[in-house]
Amino acid sequence: MMNHSSCCQHPDITHGMWLDIDAVIAENRNTPGALITVMRKCQNIVGYLPAALLDYIARGLNIPGSKVFGVATFYSYFSLTPKGRNTIKVCMGTACYVKGIKESIDRISAKYSVKEGKTSEDKRFSLEAVRCLGACGLAPVMVVNADIHGSISADKVIDILDKYS
Image (tube, rainbow, N blue to C red; front, side, top):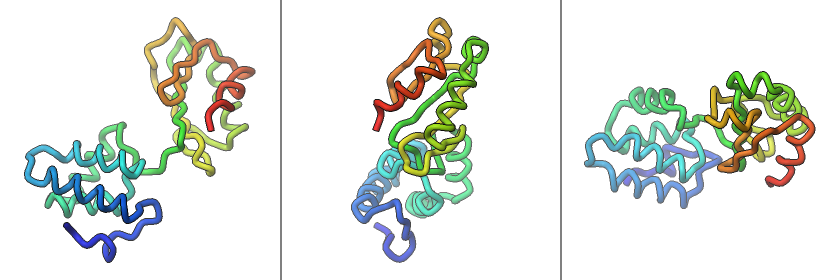
């Protein structure tokens, strides 16, 4: 595969990760339409898609870097910034908003020093505001990783999140 030691130094990507990335690219190099699969697998390895990795994928698949970047920015599944160990998704749909989700978001932001769309400095939490989680009957709703928490309040939200390390 390519020599990543000279082209792609990145503090979040270990030598072992580069070897796994090389295997993913090699496995999919001759498969038409494999870009999204390669990007998904590489994001699973690293946790996000830094610019150096996008360039590396483009060279490895012999496609323009602009195409890789375009796919990475088009699909919300892909992240160009590091994510926290725990992802908090708070619903901003009408039912949740009316029932006070904004106060819970404010409490989360203050307690863990994380803003919407960002990751806390200690990488414990990423906070995402989403349009709808499809659980309006449980409003206001928050999802942490794969755990659904309904009827949350600003008073209860910190107790819930303290259980996630």
